[in-house]
Length: 264
Image 1 (tube, rainbow, N blue to C red):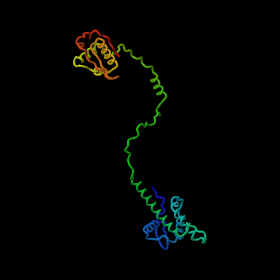
Image 2 (cartoon, rainbow, N blue to C red):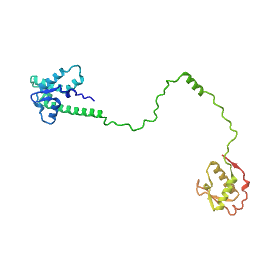
Image 3 (tube, one colour):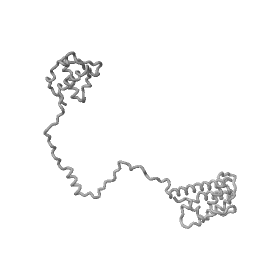
Image 4 (cartoon, one colour):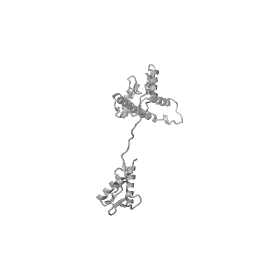
């Protein structure tokens, strides 16, 4: 990054006064180290040298000219105040503190100049420049390239899309689910009762599908009607407890008579 104050770094501009002779950069260094009291400088000479430097520039150099404006304008204002006759009207901006304001402006300029040079060094060396580690944003699709699309290709694609689809194949066989009969559930329920005193209705359901629940419930009702079992439901919607009546489980002999089939 090119500094705005390029002209100040050039050896062509030098301050020549009774108190100080040398480049402006050195003048700033002396002011910062309090080795030179800028209020002792001849402001008229410094102002004339500013203007002479501007006049001596060849061609158009807007950046160089603008670099002088802040300090030169202040110096011209202070010089004009010194040349004009004294009046009773007080101008705070033109009193004895003007020299001190100039010193403050020069110091401020020096700080900005150092910062500009540091930023230029960082940019040239590539510091604080980091490679992107995050993956590209998902979902991005590049623009569709249609440069090689011709009318013939478009017609061929359209013909393929509108081509009549083949007739669906007719399936002659129908898949059926496994058969589940009331007799099967009666035999399963009686086997469970023979192995124990009682059994819950939910424990009889191997895979609680709608068909299995209905068929098992009908098998339970059939055994109740034949006075083989008794049931107990303590609360509404609670599980049903099933127990065998005396002599009912062993004396039925009717499992093969029920052949009604249920399927989904």
